[in-house]
Length: 397
Image (cartoon, rainbow, N blue to C red; front, side, top):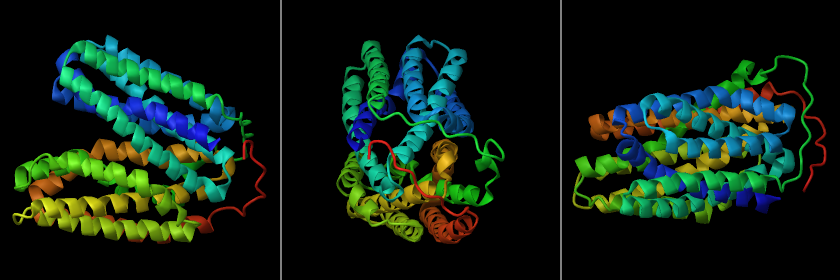
């Protein structure tokens, strides 16, 4: 069962990796969109996806997570293919919204499926395996996307979108090999209970703040290297390789140390402190001829913080969610990723590139404060949870 989940994750992450490195140039050079139009369309797409995540997760609870995940994987494949028929901004907007909605809903349904098939004490470890698989697939996909960038032809870019669609179709077929999970019966109370769960909302908000690290290596650090340091620009690639390699090698080991909410809170707290240290070392890279060394050290600290945060957040997101509402709760918790993708680039480039050393330290302080706040928030949320009921046996375990 875990192997099938990993195979499905690997399949669509290869397509995602190729899409991520080529899509902006395809939209600009082939479709003819301006950078502002691309940014606006993708932002709107992820915004719509954020709103749709909770109801789609609720649908997974009520209709069964495997079937909903398969349908959303196919919807993502259809959206990827639809980009090939986009020739204007007016057409780009609805397709971007479909792509963002299907991706966000798929993530929620997958987490609900994992929660249904895996014992609570093993969920964080399995999630770490899937994350390592994801990084490996993204690396392979990025390499394939790099070939398309080298060819730089409309046909090469179109092949990437076909690959992306095929990867999600393959993921859908693989998900069908998993045991069927019966729908959860509707419980008494509000339909979308997560929207009224204030402690869980606070925990999600704190996690969202921590997730603002996401644009660092892809956007902020490359611009920082080019504008503020004497380091060669190829270090951007080295930092990405370092990040991917560390997650592949060590994410599962880090996750195994998290056993329960107390460990998870401590992991997030430590992530905030390590991220503060990473930001401080990134700032030092502007001060002398050893910029490359500071950047590599900072990159190592950043990926350690990333792994600590992921391990703690997975445990918190699963453990605080009611078993009969995992889909909608995972949809809500996972919305932090979309928010960080939408708001992080503008916020971090303004803070760091305009603020320099002070900006880096302020950013690090935000991470440290958010990490420290997670423990009290989790304890508050834990006090409001109903007493656990006996856990039924799960299919495929």
